[in-house]
Amino acid sequence: MPDNQSLSFTATLLVNGYPLTILGEATEGAINVRHPDPSLETIDVTQALGVLTTPDEAWNDAREAAHVDFHLTGDVMPTLFYFRHTDEGYRLYIRGGAHAGQGVFKSKYGVATVSPIEDVDPTPWQIRYSHNNQPVTLADMEIDFSVICLECSASAKTLATELIAEGEGAYLITHRSRPATSLRLNIQERGVDWARG
Image (cartoon, rainbow, N blue to C red; front, side, top):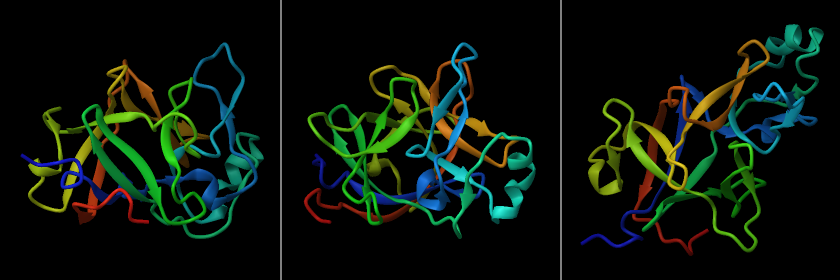
């Protein structure tokens, strides 16, 4: 029977062909956007997982309309995730870059956010195939890419896309009543040890 290490792996993720990244790694300035809850004003998604279109000029209309006030600092590179298998699901960690060693947590508003690991392990997620919603582990993935969605193990809510401005970008947030966002999973290495940096 496979153990946790043999079911763990590194991978990048794409949303509609755009690399999933930590939004603040590609921008200058905080990313404050309208909160999805109309009763609240704004939410800071600088540390959230999401996608941004490039180049920076693509955001000029959004800045002029006062939807955003940040600038892109260059090309948006995909984040390398470490998917650590546990009995509760996969816990996601960041490999490389300024956030290396940090984990992916579901914030109190349901946003997939990257932050340092302190007293609590990162949020566990179930990997499900997008086309049939069946739960899968690395053992089920015979080839190195799949189209998946991520479901919070505790709440059973899937990650969905919340648009930034008029759709020039987006961040991921758990949502029960919205369709799950399809993520292209590109496996980089299988059977990766947790202790390896």
